[in-house]
Amino acid sequence: MSMRPRLIALAASALLLAACGGEQEQPAPPPPEVGVVTVQPSTVPMTKDLVGRLGAYRSADVRARVPGVVQRRVYEEGSDVSEGDVLFVIDPAPFQADLSAAQASLAQAEANAANARSMAERARRLAPENFISRSDLDNALAAERSATAAVQAARASVDSARINLGYATVRAPISGRAGKQQVTEGALVGQGTATLLTTVDQIDPLYVNFSLSLAELEDLRGRQLQNAGPVAVEVLLQDGSVYPHPGELDFSGDVVDPATGAVSLRATLPNPDRRLLPGAYVTLQATMGAQSGLYLLPQRALQRDAVGGYVMVVGADGKVARRDVTVDRAQAGQWVVSQGLSPGEQVIVSGLQRVRPDAQAVAVPWQPTVPGAAAGAPGAGAAAGAAATAPAQGTDAGGDAADPAAAEAATQPSDAAPADSQD
Image 1 (cartoon, rainbow, N blue to C red):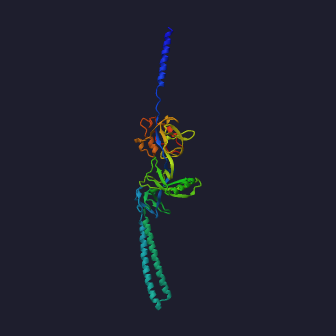
Image 2 (image 1 turned 135 degrees about the vertical axis):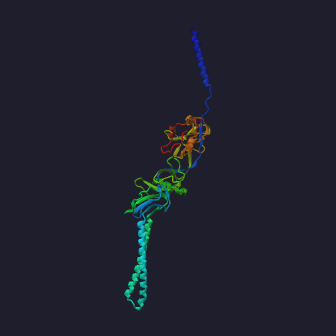
Image 3 (image 1 turned 90 degrees about the vertical axis):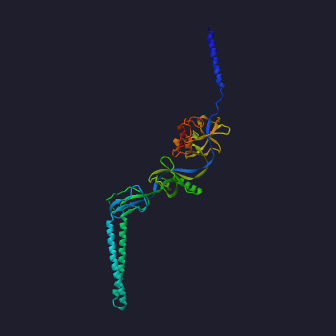
């Protein structure tokens, strides 16, 4: 009876040893595939992200230049008008009457002047024969001069009356967009002050007003001298897309604001479709020259720890190695790296969680594509579009699960631009 349990125990031990032996004989898993980009140094535009405010290129207040009652508004509020277009009509009857009276006074003055000239001519003929006294001659000549001056004054009165009559028709002083009317028909305007009727703003082009610190301005001027070209300015719209019409810097102030320590600058921005409006705040990027020898990396390739930013690379021997890098900034959805990389190195973009230093890995090109939903996402940079190439199942080029958004966001510096799309 005691041998049976002993035989059962021996059989179980043999089966367990056989199972363990089978596991030991399984081959080691192959090195994981990782998606890589081969980096090369490039020349990268130096851009500065700023906040500016749009302003009209020209702005004119339309005011009543003569007193009177507004008869009608001719223009449509918010419409584009051309210089000289009629905007308002002030009752012209009083000014027409003034013009008629001035013309009558001119006719009278001209008649008096003609009579004075005739008298003066007669006096000139009679004076040499002593038929009239010297005093009479002087009086005749003075009357002629006075009558001539009266004609000139009457003509000036006619011109003034004609000008006032013209002011009764209020015209656009510049071409632009006419604003809201400030008075209605029947309102009495121009009594004592020039009443504001409306405004006309020229909004093509527009001004973009912004400021830079003194140090940034000196750097900007230095790069202008190096590149011998204007400073380009691009505006980012509220939906994140880039406004299709870049502008140029056209003014730099010469006084530092004591309150902010900044210098005012201004750029001119084309606005042919009238999409932008004065008074709005916009985000803009000023291109302040270019810098060579930099590397551009997809945002998800960068990782951070207590030491700082780093990337993982696959060497020529297939081994994974760490490279500590210096990141200057984020630009167009990519990291701009100035130190830590060499030309031709293969930087791992996907599959980072499956590798470690000195381990073997198989490098495959990282080929991002933009899904239809993200393709139209405005403002996405190269890395943003690249990150959207992951298969629908959420795996990256190396077959591993997509990196969590939180982990990817943790790799970004505090001044980074918006992160690229998640896999």
